[in-house]
Image 1 (tube, helix red, strand yellow):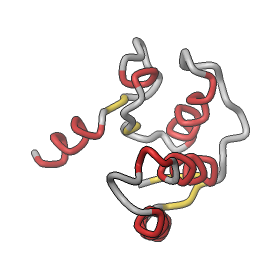
Image 2 (cartoon, one colour):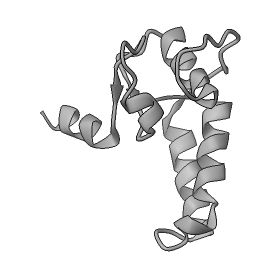
Image 3 (cartoon, helix red, strand yellow):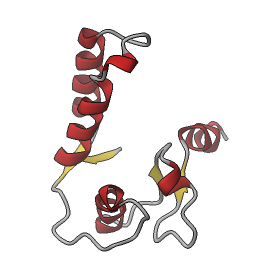
Image 4 (cartoon, rainbow, N blue to C red):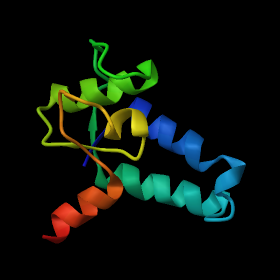
Length: 102
C-alpha cells in the first residue's frame, strides 16, 4: 500500500466530514488514519502531474501510481473508475477485495 502526504491529507479531510459521523467518530477516524499511516509505504508527492483525468484533483493519484509503476490504483471515485484508456489500472475497493480474495 503506497501513499503520499497529499493522499493522507485528503483521506483525513474526507473522514473528518460530518457526514461520516454515522459510520465512525472523529476519534475512530483519527485512529484509522494513524493505523493507515503506519502500515503504508510513504512516497514523496509526484513532481510532475500529467493531465490524466476529467477531475484535475485526481491527476496526482495517477501520477503517484505511475511514479512507482504500481499494478493498480484503488479508488471509488467515478472520475477514476470510469476512466477510459487509463494509464494505470483502476480498481474500485470492491474490485480490489475481489481480486485479493482470489
